[in-house]
Image 1 (cartoon, helix red, strand yellow):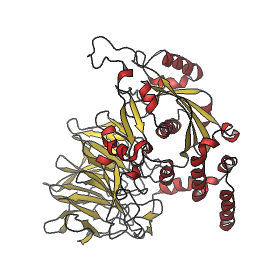
Image 2 (tube, one colour):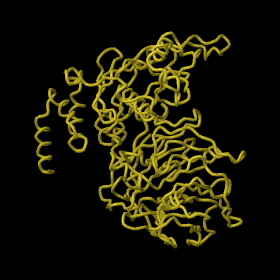
Image 3 (cartoon, rainbow, N blue to C red):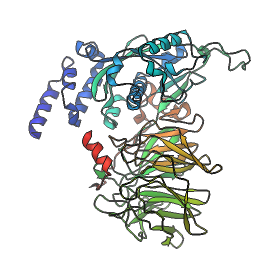
Image 4 (cartoon, rainbow, N blue to C red):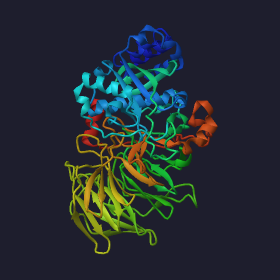
Length: 583
């Protein structure tokens, strides 16, 4: 039936019009044909100012949202794509947490505010007496309690409003969003301004075609107490809004990648994207919020790690899609622009842990094609050779490995089929592994790294679901505590610290492979996908009113490496197979 399907799709595209495009977009099973759906969505986005007046759009299920703003200037500067995407992210979060269902969204009007982590939150969570708890918010709270008593049980802690008004600027055009969209079931297709501070968006909510009716509403915070400083006591309406824009996405969805800090940038190598192991390498430059391509690796690699040592990048082991690898390659951009072969690992393996400590690279455990292994090695770059060290007490793969306080930590992972919560610590001086306090949630495929003087465990999978939870180990109290949750669940995620930000890169959400990144803001202690104005200035100057990140320069635009070769990646984990089939 493929040929019949292709011809039918070509016929529909040829006769696509303002009058029939919504009916075509609503066809059952359309989401299975990615190329067809993209063509329809591009047409809708281009003509949406006309389409939004049709009865077909007005008859779709509609969710009504009010978003509070602290000043009129903030309202006048709002970017509609950014606003609509934030609302979409809020809806998705509520559905995933079980607070709402898609069917419940049209039952009432929801009132939201922009929180300090640049996410939207329901105004029913604002505590009584807060400066933003005005009469309109109090009326909304009463109505919410009347409609749904369960709203009082919020699953997310209260997040305050920023002290100054904020404007979020989305720096990609709708066409770029469609090309890089990670989750088609939760997708912004098009948006239009339909009145003063009113917007209409066409979206997919859990795969269902729907509309969002969004109205901006002024909610000037109450007059602060006289004891506050003169600067802090100025009315919010006099404040100039702070500007924020979205983090740029990687050029390709990537899971189980190699990732590290390289010269104060974020370096991401290889990985796999549902079916293919990759050779491509890209570099994120935080100062200009841009991804830049770098020389591709010699081999396709997924489920591997990289290590940066003395400004050199080492790609270690992994899988090429057919077999586990014992090969190692190195990139030294100060001397050459290509990867060179290094001494092989003593044992081929994938899903191992890698870290650097005192000028050495440690390779811990992994998968040899049959079982999780105990074997560990250390690489010394001076004689350029691998040497064995003490073996793990428990064979494990997909463990999180990091150096912390002159020790090497191996956290969680999988022994064969079971996720582990156990933690082992290697002492280089004694060449011994000892057990220490286990993590709270057993997990594999998590990211582990030192950040702000503490050891962080980020995301992973519990064997059934991808996780967005984090845990933090405080060496002073020798205890694990629950940390802030990420905005997206990420299994087989990689992490890196660049500057004062802890980045989580790519991964598997439970349904899709991700091309997104997010970071933990040390000031707000919240994960976010937005960056402050300082990082957006260059984008704003170059792109003007379009906020198009492609206009920075042709050379800096992230691209796929057209010459890179791909091979089919083998043995996805059991929950990844199940999630792929169910989606």
